[in-house]
Structures are given as structure tokens and as C-alpha cells.
Image (cartoon, rainbow, N blue to C red; front, side, top):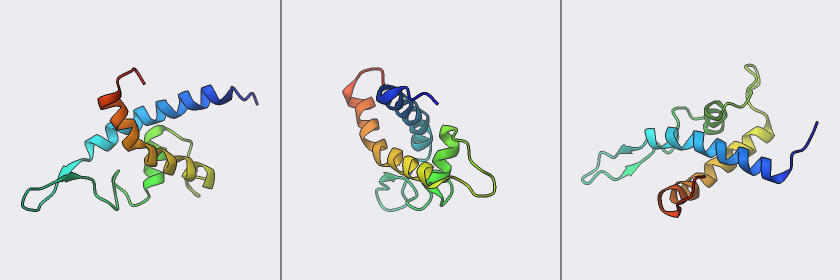
Amino acid sequence: MTDFGAESKAARRIIHLMKLLPAFVDRLRRGDCEYGGWGLDDKRPFGNSDVAGDIAKIIGLQVDGDTGITGAQREYCDGLYDDLPEYLRYRLFGGGSA
């Protein structure tokens, strides 16, 4: 198998963040309190409690129906979720096409 290098991995990660961002924004809701701050459901930000599993589906990772995602896939998806706020700030305020 050919390793196309860090540039290809970085490009793939940006594509995955681009796919994840609309799903993140679509789930934003205004809270029920007095002023109702905007946020996500802490336990189910993408609809289910398996956040990494939801992310894997959103970005199109191959998921085994019986066993779900692998440990490496879960780690990758968790990392995407960690990077999402920074990516959102970049898209809103940093310019560029990524």
C-alpha cells in the first residue's frame, strides 16, 4: 500500500472536518434557560451517545456492522471532534479555502 505522505493525510483530515462542520452546526440549539445560550447536547452532539461512531458515519469511514469502529478509527474521530472548534474559528475568522 502506498503512503502518500503527511500532505495527503492532512488534506484528508481537512475534508473530514469540512464534512463534520455542517453536522455540528445543524445540531446547535438555543437552551431553555432565561437567555438560552447556544450549544449542543453534551451527551449526544450528533444524535447518539456514541459520538465517535456518529462522526465515523458522517465522514464516511467504513464501519463494521457487528463490531462498530476500530480503536484507531475511534481515536481519529475523537481527534477530529477535538479539532472542530479550532477549524470553525479558522473558517469564520481565518479566511482561506480550507
